[in-house]
Image (tube, rainbow over the protein chains, first blue to last red):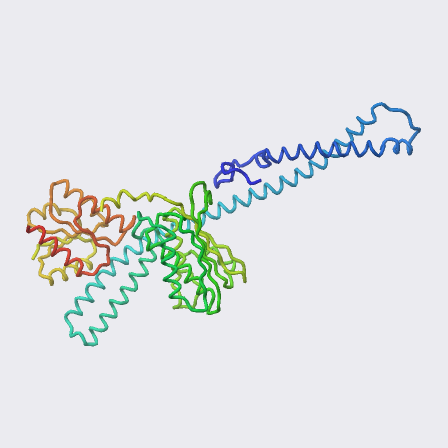
Length: 351
Length: 125
């Protein structure tokens, strides 16, 4: 039995669990049943084989004793108690280790969330400064270009400077998507519809050796994401999966279905993107959502795709995680609340 | 031609945008902060205000609120590169408080010029 939601260990709940809470009512009931059943079975068995008769035969002369059965029952009860206590102790040990694991996981998630949030604040500040620095670069290079003959080398170089600045803008836009500070905070979209169109886009862009398998429930529902952001999530995950295949043939499975009550009570939708690649080594699994973390060769990946997904999912009130074992591919699971009302909706309606 | 007051704490941003606006034929005054803007608007007969939103001493948001509260009806263009909260949130707040238009930095200066032309034309009517 898993503990009820109210009973799960929350970080900070240091006063923690009494032994009885840890065992739980159901386990105690089981303990009682095992005890009674064992007692009855043992008693019947001992009466059946006339244990006292045999015992007496070895020790002293047999004599009539009216309480044979009762003494046997007492003996059986003692043996049953010892057995049940052993079983109970084992159950307790398992339960406590489960609780400890849950608490460790919760603390780990919290620390990770804290780390990513402070990184988000940092990146938000950095991008503010960068945006201000990029403004004169873009404006002045363009004004200078207007002064020059269009086919001069200087004019072409200025166009290159502008192009580089635009590249920097694009990086900043994606960084902001991670740090929850991008645009479109209050929009909503029909997730299956957005996924379907993004999948069509993706299937046109991926190598022919990679097959996309779609299983999208059209009734999965609306989520608190701009349509373009829902598409970005899928495209980033698919492009990540394609890269994971490293040019080999493979399959990418995209599943989207309602997930009522998971991971929390309420209406949720689950999006799964799984690939048949080599899997993600456990040592780096906790870093893959960090901005600029990449395993790709220099120049081949920005390390922003998954961090962007992380930011967008969290902004929509969702959760995400990865499951992977070496050689068995990777499975990204995203849970989004259905019909989630973004807190910023009133602001948007003013526009 | 419009008389534009450009408020931004970043000197380089001011320089670049003022140059672009002047080249497009507008008359530009510059200010490095929101302090004293209200007085300047009245004394200099400014047509359009272009203001940054995140500045060290006086926030552009506060400036817009102050101007609208003082009954200033001139068109205001809010520009922002983000800050403590998102740039987009700032821009939304600005338009909610009465900014006529918003632009997220870095933007193409031609967008700003088009905006100013349009706002100036509307104001003439």
